[in-house]
Structure formats: structure tokens, C-alpha cells
Length: 84
Image (tube, rainbow, N blue to C red; front, side, top):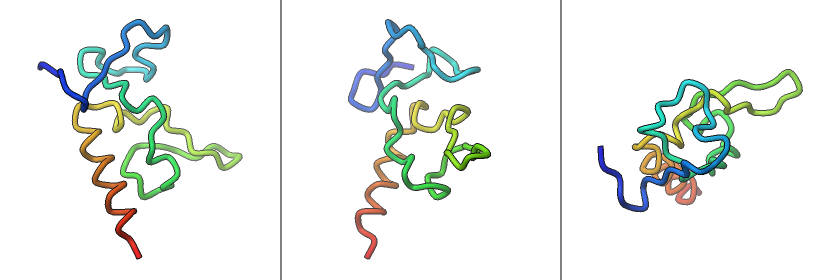
């Protein structure tokens, strides 16, 4: 799979690459190191848990790092910005 546009970026020099356990390094997207959907809580569409103290733990979520994640995130953000 060839990725050479703005929807895909892999920082292989990062000491944490890939930062998610079990991720396929050949199809891992670093574009959203911090997911812009974090603040959407449970409506983000990703895989997450809440810690006992109430923090959202996205360490098992590969949604923003998958090749199709960019498109999902831009659609989610667009739908939120169009909400009344």
C-alpha cells in the first residue's frame, strides 16, 4: 500500500513508533498523534475505556492511526461543526 499524501504520515524516527501495542507498523498513521476527537467523549467512534478516575484512555484505539482514520475524523469534525 502506497501512502504519499496528506492523509498518511509515519514518523519512523520516533522512539515510540508505533506507539500503540499490536499496531501494524506498515499501516500505522502518525498524522494524529493527539486525536482531535478526544473531546467528543463516547461519540468519537473509536475504541477506548474510561479509567477509574474518569479519564478517557485511548491507548488501545487505532482509529486515528489507521489509513482510513483521517477521513473518519474529518467527517466527525465536520458533523460537529454543522450541529446547531
